[in-house]
Length: 400
Picture: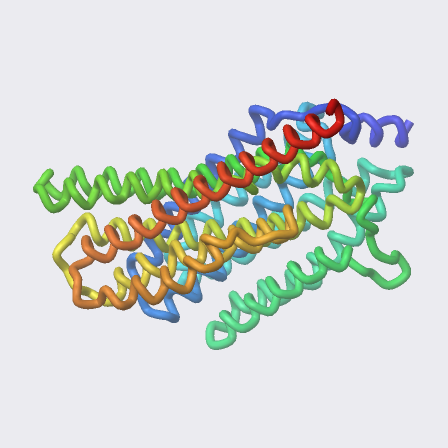
């Protein structure tokens, strides 16, 4: 009976999957979390503030990532999985609420909510999977989260060592996932053990990336509305919209639209590709979050020459491009020449605009993004034309 119950919890790999309503509902917690993270970065634009926000983002991303994989492995319609997803969502909301003071008075709230999410997942799944081979995978994951949980709680209790202990916990968790959660006497999970539905997970990645872009659009609109609709602010708002559309286009073409097919084509080892894609989406979302803050400050004061917003306007898109380049290398085994050549030009050009107001820097950065898109489109058309001409020539020789 136990085996039958556990089997009913699992998704059938051969069944096509679309994200469920419950998964999309869960993403509401991430919308709140990204907004809180952007407010935390806005309150402290120093390098230390940026590092702290990056740590919190990595923790929140890990909650989303592990939950997305769990929803891929298990049937989200099963009552136990519904309870699990709702519990994780509530824990994620607790973490998000604690973000502004996670390195202050609410450190313990953030850490305990994080640890409770991961250990609670194991507490529900391990008994439910009794008698099924998949149980060993859940036991491995839960044991290692119990170990890293010590670092999280200890970091919350010891303020001077908080950043170091939390960073160590995150590095351990991310590294162990890539190694298959190796555990004494239980071994490690193989890539077939971790196999995912490529199309489903790729769609989930797209959805969470759109949510990150949504934060950029939302705060741009709110800031513009508060700025009084002056000509400079209107121009800044227009630049922000074009920049958001350019980031979306660069994400989707060519790699973003092919990720699911690449995971499926790789078979069981495709889970490794899906894992790497998850790491790189964290890099891209961090870039979008930084861009969002830079754009918000630019719309609020387009004529400012403040260095901190300028740094965000340059490093944010550059970080996104770096993640996208690496994702292309992982998925297609190739690098986009316009992006590879354009990235250093992008960074140098951005910081060379130090004498310009923020609106000038943002316009330059957006123009470079558009130039990159136009160049890629022309190269792609030229490549397709050559392929078509080669095919036509081959047909003529065959029938000649």
